Structure formats: C-alpha cells, structure tokens
Amino acid sequence: MPEEEEAAAEEVPEEMEFEMELTTPAEYIQCAYFALSSIEDIDEKMQSDAAYKRIKRIRFKSLRIIDKCVNDLYDELFDDGAGTSSD
Image 1 (cartoon, rainbow, N blue to C red):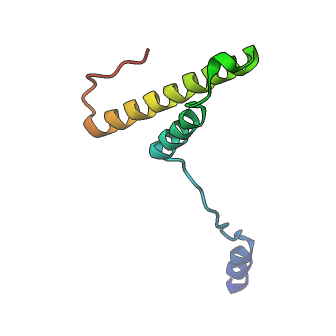
Image 2 (image 1 turned 135 degrees about the vertical axis):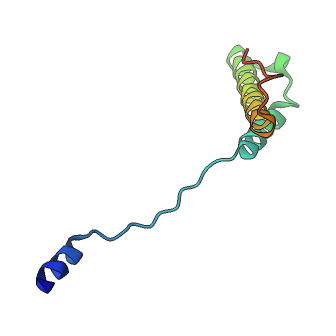
C-alpha cells in the first residue's frame, strides 16, 4: 500500500510558476496620451496624404482608448449606470 501512495505522489505534475502581467487602465491612458503627445506638434498640412491619415488614425484611436478606460474607471468607482455613453 505505501508503494502505491509513493507512485501516485510521483505522478502528480509539479506546479509551474509563472508571472502574469496585466495592463492597468492607467497604463492604457498613459500610452494613449504619449501617442497624442508625439503627434501634437506635427504640422498636418505639410504631410503627405498617407501621413495625414496616419496622424488622424492615431488621434482617433488614442482618444477612443482614453474614453473607454475613463468610462470603465468611472463605472468601477461609482457603479450607478448614469452618465456613461458608448457612442
């Protein structure tokens, strides 16, 4: 009987240790702000059509990230369902 317990103990796989890094809403907001800051001083009129579209896309996506994260933080803090819109 003790031999069976030892065999069963040997068959149990060892637990794997790993680290899981989560990105916080504040980090998303910070990255989006940095993206907006990096294009802030670019003169859009002096850029090619492709560069102009790229700048507009960066601005649009960064503002959407900030909007979503701020709404999520607001909902988490106040959880009243009022004052949020998903447009």
